[in-house]
Image (tube, rainbow, N blue to C red; front, side, top):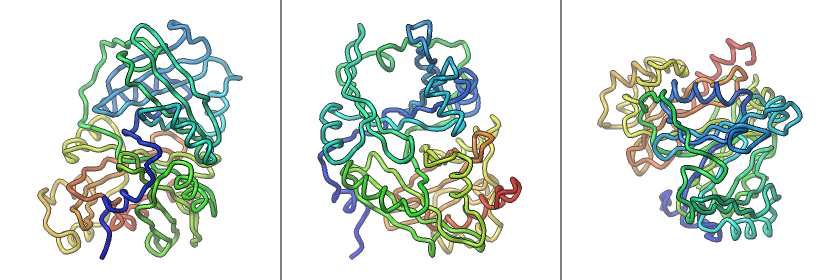
Length: 375
């Protein structure tokens, strides 16, 4: 009998309880301008700020929120700062995947004794609103997981930050929470990374795709989805596979100059409304699949609640698993380097990751690669 995703997730070890994603921190070249972009284009709201005015002399950080999603945009104030070096090598990209935990010190102890490489020793941050305990370890590439314990804190974000008041607050676009974050790793590195998540983090592999399932005429990839014990934290891992031409994963590794976060999937309860709002604000999405995709949709996916016309108009993809269906669409890279992008996803019971859409997605990515001269 086929296991459900809930049954697979239940097999994870439970030594590291995680309540979900606390925040995602980007290292960027100009945090003030990046914050304006994410407010204008995606509808994020101003939340908190830290910089020279708050006593943080070497960098500036802007915190944005929408639904349960918090993103932090950090830039260095001098060229020799580690943030500057990260941006010089990778361009704007994700440095921190912060996880909300009940006990940050125990999380550090449990993961480091299982082989996790320390990034941040257990630390207590305090101000008049209470205390936050934090620790952290490296994962793939230069990306890190921070463990954040904030049960004794009532402030807007973290000690050292002040509330960010802004007269410019564009309307939200319906983004609710982070569904998953996908990492790209190098050749023959996926199994090693999967093993790391199993042994160090106590995660379980709930889904696997190989190059026979995810391929086009020109390129292929392999992917495995890792989940913690309650399913609140999911990290798919991609690795390139041999093909006639360069895959999107290889292009990412070349231009990011290493392993890192490929895309962030954010959930909505009305994908048509959200995508229309994002497009109206200038967010660019991958080209729509061929008309035959939607002609075959009723036969492939079965009955869905949404009308096909707006899905076809916007290029939204649909897939089904044993527990329901999902709708998803992918932006183009949000920087000039063809690296980080976003996925907008709406789940109608399905807990999978759109395997039936991979061919259409990969072909759309290849069309973009060809325009850039990187296929």
